[in-house]
Amino acid sequence: MAQRTTRAPRPGVRALNPRHLGADATFGTRLVLAAVATAVVAVPFALALVLVESQWAPLHRLDRTTAERLHQTALEHPGWVRVLEFFSSYVWDPVTMRLLVAAVVVWLLTRRAWRLAAWASVTAVAGGLIGLLTKLMVERARPHLPDPVSHAPGFSFPSGHAMTATTSCAVLLLILIPLVPRAWRPLPWVVAVVAVLGVGYTRVALGVHWVSDVVGGWLLGITVVTATTLVFEAWRLDTGRRRTTPAQGLEPELSSATPEPPLDLHPVPAPSDEPHDPPRTPHSG
Image (cartoon, rainbow, N blue to C red; front, side, top):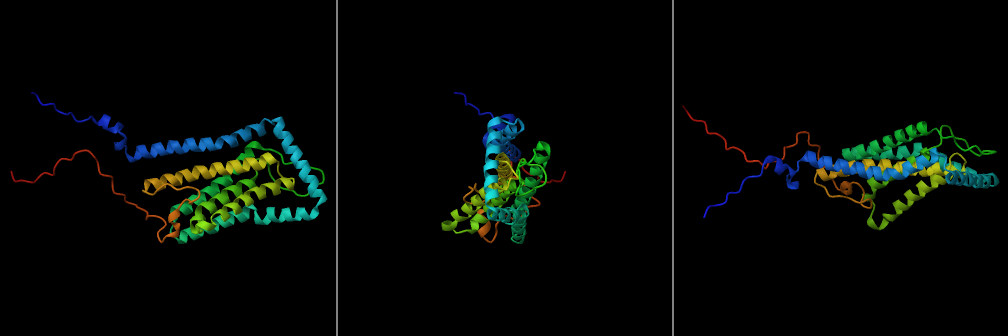
């Protein structure tokens, strides 16, 4: 009975086997998934932008009605206006938020958490630039109300205060939450949510933004943070670290002595599955 011989798979067939996917294919897959996830998150902001640009009547009525009611309240309570101005111009001002992020970045550099510091810096800078470019493209005018209680320069959509609060609070939370005891971790989340919602309320109550401006700022900020976070998560997987959840923070290892593996400037190539020829033994002729 003749023996059956097993033919070795051709290189092209081996390349299609998931177990033999190389680093480039893995990176490409993660890049596509990150792009899809970012696009999905960006859909609500894109929808808000379309509704604002088309001057959708229900949204216009909501903006106008809310602005008029809050403006009337502000005119009747000057003391309340001073409180709103304090929180809007000092506590939740974009400069204050960015300084907090900058301080955390400096601290990360002292901990040699280079990649986490880079993520925080890129997220903050990208958020500011994208928000500014969007304002310049949309060119939406700010509310014009009788007897205004506050003034602000520039265009209206999206709210820079709302977007900066969203990106900054997300950066601070995702970095610092591993350092907070588990029993206390809900507290930073409550503080962040209050800050993001509070700054949105102050901007509308002071008559310098429409409701849709604030919502647009929140959505665009979430989109930016999602995009940069997906890139950071891909790096974690490439270095053999486990996935994290927002409740755990971006880098749970930050509480340890070595928050990040050292930079490998000369990586060792992965071993190949292909057979190698045995080394030749020199011989005299």
